[in-house]
Image (cartoon, rainbow over all chains, first blue to last red):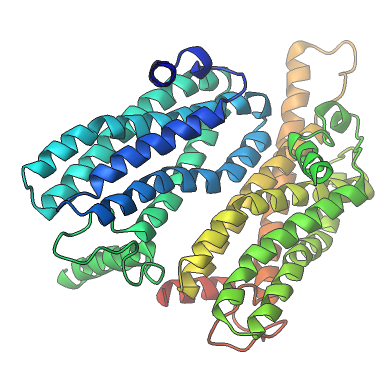
Length: 224
Length: 244
């Protein structure tokens, strides 16, 4: 019942998870993120009913949700102080943590849907798309919580908008790399189950993106 | 450690550059503490930068790591020493309230802010260093990190400089429009001085970084304290993009 009221508090931004200042209940937030991430990860990695894949992804999803946030926190703090937002830092941090928690809870709530569709024997590309959509939907849910926490902060001081967008930019930049390293998440049933794809640390998604985009524009120029 | 972090916090909050103090032409900065804090933070980021050499090279990588740890604080110190006289002269011409010593203290404080931002991005740099082998990518990443830190640091300095040119209590008998005119004139002077100096600082900082290279350490090149100076940094950036 206590966990249920914690979840309810995060989703409605009420009680100890209400918008505003106050000590951030980070232990409980961490527990919710890890448990929800584990629940979704176990389902995500179970395509083809591979137990090992399921366990691996159960570990990876919480890592994906927490590692990038942790890396970006020092910069978030320094930026907020430099922007003169030190007094609101507790409230801003609460907003970030509650956003991650909402994202994890939304993912966990979609786990039964993913499990059901896996049970109908969907193919690997469809499974990839399905999980991509689930993450997209969960991100939107996270944004609802983020907007709720940040609206009064931005109304109080517009510099919070810069702080928020800077955080978001850095977080996305780091998360993409973290996600790239932690592949595979779904796991092709035709391939052997591994924790990391071979050469995970050698490839760089931004270098791949640079050459892909560059190649596209170069081909356009050549056609002109 | 806690005392050190508190010192960083005080610097970032602007406790040494309060508006009221700056308007009076007073800079109350414990120069030893701020300089020491800046040096440690710079060295921390230097260690993060140099970790690429530590992971990619053999024993020589340790040397590159140590060199980079020393070079980052020196980069800021040398840039500061080269550009401080010009900031003082331009400010004094525009009748700023700060003398040369106070101008140096203000620059120390802004360098401290830059190194604090760099240090906060250190974990991100180390993460990408550990997870990529692309030397040009790491070059561009560090350039972007330095640019972000530089922008925030000059923002801090710009705010402080604008206070230094604000008029004190206006002379009695002046109309509201005249007082506003005085304030606007001070703000325009501050902006002009600052923009001119910023161009100088930017050019000096970039070229100083180019002259003091290598910081990361090209795995294909031998480790040296300074590489032979050739071309300029813009050419270096284009080369990094070409070989990504």
